[in-house]
Length: 151
Image (tube, rainbow, N blue to C red; front, side, top):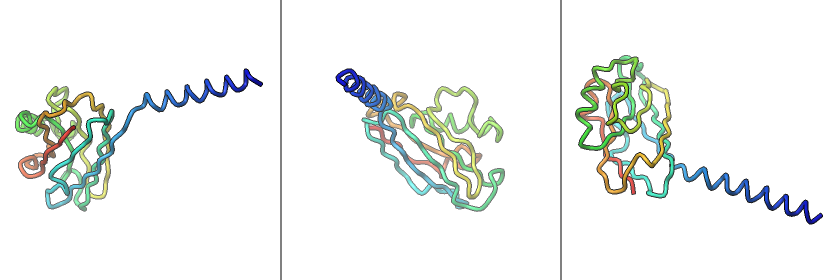
């Protein structure tokens, strides 16, 4: 009986440690429509998050090839260069230059009524650093952008 209780306690501690090791996932939702606007200008995520999940919903009706949207995160200082390089990367690459180290995270391009999500480790971010998010579909980044605060 004592061995069974010890085993049960050990199993419970193992499960608890596994849950703790998973950390805190912070989920954020953002929408973008045919009016070429995100529904948020700022996203704030707490410093105790270990993983960040961003879900982008295209709230419009136009197809991805005509009015596609994605969500791209960079340091604010890198936004313009990453967006410009992304435009040349093409639709098949989600208008994100392959291997671009300036891009911290990005979603796929979606069209009207579609949703996409991306998860990335919060360890890619530093508390107090200036970050921005934007849509890298050609011509969108100058309007579809906002600030991302971590900490």
